[in-house]
Image (cartoon, rainbow, N blue to C red):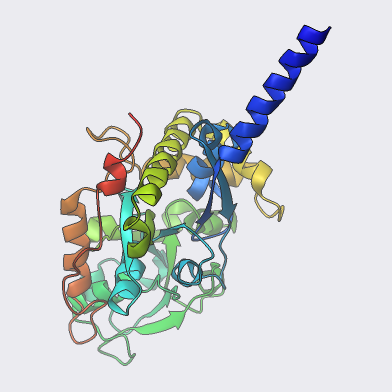
Length: 333
């Protein structure tokens, strides 16, 4: 009995020691709990973060939460952010650095009512009312309009920008000719509201040549100056990408894990499973480097789009030090 008791004590000590040794980290998401962030919830739920000695807290976002402000205030170690917003914040003095790029493709598009007669952005946007998200999500849109030579101040030779809430009401209520949607979310809200695909015309940013990088992982320069922090981030990145790989291979199960973590009860199984399927299309799972590797050419393309802002560019000059492969290279082998 004494041997059994001692073995139990030893096991308890091992478990306790492991728990105490786990490095605490906080990840701030860009939006609410949904399949857009499935890989992180999978990594936590499946014990992948624990396997790499991490105790990760995942903080959902929302309409009143700006990830750059959260990390600037010390509320997160890593944030999920779109590159346009991150580069704009960097130029304004917040030294955000991209350490991984999960989404290879953009899911952003404008969805228009077909009855408006809009067929070609180059000729048919002039004089129209377009719904646009703000809080950092407007930057790709503003660059696109600039490239089309359209003012966003309204008038017959420009477009009227309707500051769109994070819903599809302006389209349903015919307050706007087109609204901002994501391939994995709001577009399907329009469909669920009663519109048929043939009643709509969609313009994907990818197809228009104005796509910018979306969900990437960012931290602060001062964090990267600490070798121990880089090592810790390397483990975080390794675990997160394993979570994403599992989510892509097990999409329905990943969607259910997301639902289990949705404390609001706002999400539905149908919507999350559909979203997970669309999210998987945006991730470069077959690349030679693997999920999360930032291709410098993709970065340069995004910068080029953002600099093409005419008199009101998103950024005024090419950034320096805005991304690094140091964390990617620090992943456990």
